[in-house]
Length: 322
Image 1 (cartoon, one colour):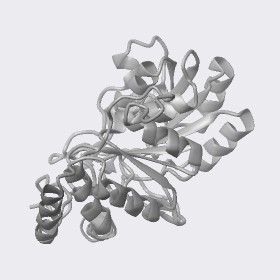
Image 2 (cartoon, helix red, strand yellow):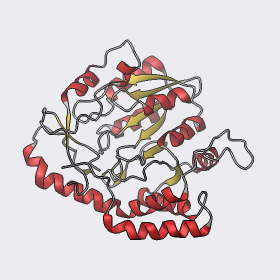
Image 3 (cartoon, helix red, strand yellow):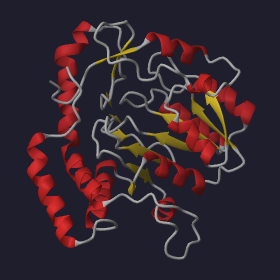
């Protein structure tokens, strides 16, 4: 199965109609399609939604709102470097937490140890591969008990849910990416979701230089209208893509790969990746083959993270891939 972007070819006419509308409107930024994309994503996730030009812009808005500058923020080492780099760029110190072998996501047991050691202001939990972190509820309880801000990196988790709860609903904010390889894509782009009305308003100002009173020291992280129009169509198509991937996995893959990530009852994966624990010939590689603490030269041991980097592979699973 060859890589294909998760885009339904039958949506091209609707997309071109939207783009023509944008051209004729003479409003290529800060227009109706960005607002419409946010409304659709908000309805889908039942949270406030603020569109950004990138995951990074949305992440920085959340980190700055919660005032992490000068503090420590924890995140799993089994993630893309975007997560720790967002912490560093927000003026905080990053320290890493080990993961669990069964879901490749943050270990609550190790999080307890790292909270006592580092006294963090905030924690990033990362939903790896398209599913929800299996220990998300324990992580939420721990962070609430300790008064720690919990942020969800949802870059892989489009359409993922657990007993009907979508990624981004457990923490204080969730950050999605719409990069070209994601389950649904706009080419580039990001979205912040939150229950916190004040954070949502801060994020809208942060992405646009703090306009209009400039009390928020933001920069340009606006999403353009052409990108937002793709997002509108992709959001409408998301359930179809998730259903197709889950049906394909059940029919064609699960029987052949008993040593795979197996989900708890009630969990639906967006299947950004189909992860197995056997080396396979036609693998698309690994989710991450280098751990962030190794890249950054952190001199401590995270045994499960190191094991994961060596012992998982990804089976091709792309929406209507050739």
